[in-house]
Image (cartoon, rainbow, N blue to C red; front, side, top):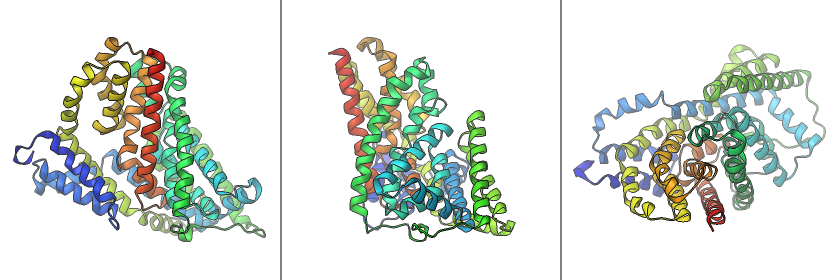
Length: 435
């Protein structure tokens, strides 16, 4: 640390990031860039080597997520150029009746949750559906901020339900419990709380942002006399069949986030060819769409060293040391609350690593306080997954990017909804078991 400051001061870049996030007119990319430089300096790193750190970050998982989001925007442009996006929207609005904002919120949430559950990846699944649902929700007046709330709040619950998502696989390994037990003891209860809370937050955000935000050129209105051309019909069928085949293949092979790259490239090329677009036109559309998200990709690349600087400073470990005396003397309810809150606010990093750290740090106390593995599964799930709602981070920034949203405030409002009810749920269950 600079000037031999105590490790706890390593949290300052994170606090600065949160403060700047609420500053009017602050661009997210500028915010992250400032905090990366500040984090580099305060942790005593040589700022001259910052370029090498960023170079390494290009190959990180966050870099992959940023690229996937860019590619999703590229696929969206192909779907618009081929007329597929409008065709799907017109069909859904006229045939199925997604004509109200509440129905659009529910339909989008279901699509996001189901695809995340099937693919086991949040950013990848949302990147696949974003080009399809944006014209749909725009047509009924939903705003980008509302869509971002849905993508994260409901979409992330798919990770709590999927039998092969990283959180559930990790929890099965930690607790030794079978998937059905974990699903009913942890994944499903937390998901239900998230579904209800996100729906209410989405309605509130929609009310506050209506008329102030829009999707611009991505909006599509319903046309009673709309008749798709044979080329558009052929391209739509090609897109849907390709997506179905690729998704099923991804589920069987457990392709994960990296497989989504192949899904979107294949879907874009096949759809473009079916629409009789020339190869150059297809890739021009892909690159044009990706160009709209280049700022988000760069932000993800910078986010990796930003989080690494905070973690390497030992700030999270120092925070834990301050709380250890309380943990040792706590009863089941206090132990549960301390563990989950330290997990949410005090341990950051890759989700799987967070779960393992929580288990290693607090697992030895389980026999002392009498907590069994089913309850421990819920504690670890909330402790390592709700972190993404606590701070402006890659998950909510990814959801914002895919939804074309710019304001962080709705995402922080969603964060309060995720943290408070899930923590109360956990405390009530613990009290009921030990009361």
